[in-house]
Image (cartoon, rainbow, N blue to C red; front, side, top):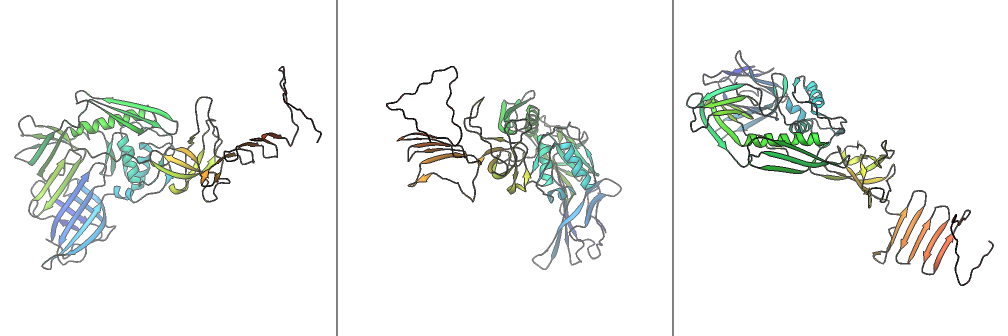
Length: 487
């Protein structure tokens, strides 16, 4: 079906098309239309009808808003249809639709993505939507990536933001744009096409440099990056960031600097309906006076058609707020591999609570670890361990230690409500026991040989041949009485 919108201003004529449906009974009943477009978010469209006609659409139906003989303003599919009965007996039907990016929000599968980068992810997801990709930044590849508690859309936005880019879906192409936008420009003059406008200069977000400091949990190495711009109002330091290397830290610093620069001078306005205004396009505002004229890159555009106003376009250049920083997660894992190919003492684990993802090689927290020292005791294949995920997913992590779980400890060492005994035991039965209650230190080899120190004496019991030797050195045996017995 095709429905021309009533009472439009002469700037453009829009029409609404609901595929496979008719508007029989709805002619002249279109009450309002909103098309909301934001960078790095699915575009949304809401159509409001008033009248007694049959429901013109169902979820899944295509919905297109375009100009007669001109560009498409919105193309998507109906997500929801609501019916409301108003006071006085009127009936209102609200049809809400999103562009194809919304499908990425519905896809959420825990999976490992080795060699993850924005290029590869964008190409993969765009192919599923049947659209092309335009991306002008070099690939910034992460050695290891994981998608946990993230929809495909969330992951795409995260990588885009970390690369200093925003994206939009327009005319069958997924565009990734930098702070300069798409290079287009529309001139609006106050008192003519420009109906309302607000320009704000804000010194708070502005800065001359941004420094990012963080670490890579997979390599246990510090990372650092810096970005600078002329002017500004000081330096900003962002700390505790998870980044692959110094290059990624520099990208993050530049993205933060660009966001702050964009927030230092922003505009909001309303013009007569103008479908040339889209997120990522440039706009030049004129006729403001007081040195307020200037160029801006739009981040949000809303086309509105209502009975009271006709067709108007609201726009803003305010940067989108950054995504919330990741929340570290602690979870349990099962060790799957210990044969670290680089012999660094790392292990790989599966994470049952994270969709059974298998991690990359993770370092293991070790007591007194340092150069050529420390307690070197790795968990073994099949052991249950506690894993810290600093980025909240399986992309990087550190094994904090082992967990006995339901079977419990073979020997807790608790006596009389206090811990009195410590035991270090291998799977082969070798063990060292420090028993504070009995004052005993006991060393066993698992085959019956024992060295035991007690308050009463030192006992050495060998199940095999016993050799005491000190080549080239004196052997001294001293005691009040020395006995040798054959056994």
